[in-house]
Image 1 (cartoon, rainbow, N blue to C red):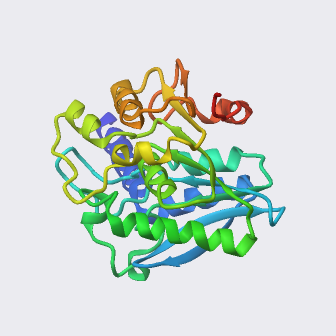
Image 2 (cartoon, helix red, strand yellow):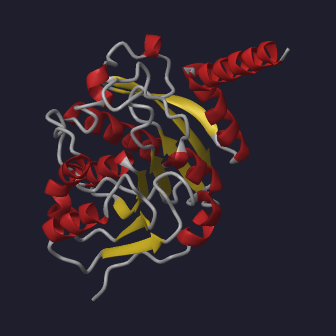
Length: 279
């Protein structure tokens, strides 16, 4: 009599697992997170992609804090590429929802959340080797400019999570209105990270560490997880070495944080930390 019950439980588990991996479920989860933070959804045409964004604008003309999502569900396994990179756990969106700032914007990466039929340019390249390609950075930069223009923002504070940190760095290097840069469990030097994991380099991507010196005058605070097994601290050290000038560079380690856990609980507190350049 136990076998039918076990079979039923197994089938229920498999059904639930498949449902939670579906793009529709992941989009629905993002809607719930955004709603809880008072963020409104919009789509932005930022060639060559259509990007999904969430925002809460209550003081036009004042600075925007813009969050950039991580790499998302890029791989099913180490060697099998996902058909849709929409993240299962959109940490950057969770952080944006926690942010009490007057103007908050969340930007998903290309091909995340936006249905593929609305994004004919999407292909696996843009969430694998080309995740930091010129097309991707140009699109993200255009989306930032869209919100700056829409709100008349006096400047922007960028926050990038994981691979979104690399995007934030590369976007910062293209702009003149970035007031500060924060990264969370950030991939600051993909070459170091890939060597650490024993995987091939990103042949189709730009290198954020290569522009570290260009943005050395921008106040930066890089958050590191003490239990992060994905991004080694060596990546932070390598980025700083290439930056050269340390006056605007700060790090903060959260001892118990992993790559994806332990950030949202204290995020409001972490936002109170000053980001500045030393004399």
